[in-house]
Image 1 (cartoon, rainbow, N blue to C red):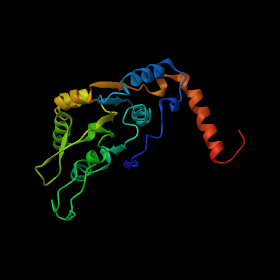
Image 2 (cartoon, rainbow, N blue to C red):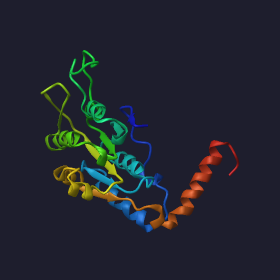
Image 3 (cartoon, rainbow, N blue to C red):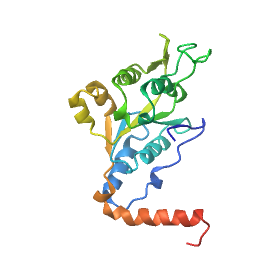
Image 4 (cartoon, rainbow, N blue to C red):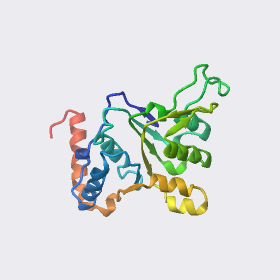
Length: 217
């Protein structure tokens, strides 16, 4: 799903124990992630598509002191800028044509005391980069059409499969936001660089398919 809101007691689907692996490379990534899981440090999870970035986001949330609160996941590349802005930051009553008379909370407010996972963070516009930087620095959001700041307590996990350093150099991604997001970078190597994981992952997939189809293992 592009947006997933958990219930208040949702702790994330997966833990570090659910990360199938046999390689030293992934063991080291898990060990690094576990060291900071209980903190509120912002984590930038990097790796190619399909390497398990969202799985690590779940595990980080599930191992944190925020695990009893919400984990909200957003794919930033799935929405046009105007819609993503209202989704993330909310809007005041009658802020624009079609806006509700009571306004709407954004996902940062929804994630208060919990975690928000911003997938494909490298795709957001310059305008949204400025607003996200404010959220990180000031720990508050301002809804569209309002000037009133709303304090929030949210841990930010972000993920990208693009070269953010290159985008910073090209002027497409703010350097100050890059450093704010990269407080603790976590790199997940692709499967071709950890071939020892191929067998256990394949066996896990086969076992799951058999169970789902009620076949004997």
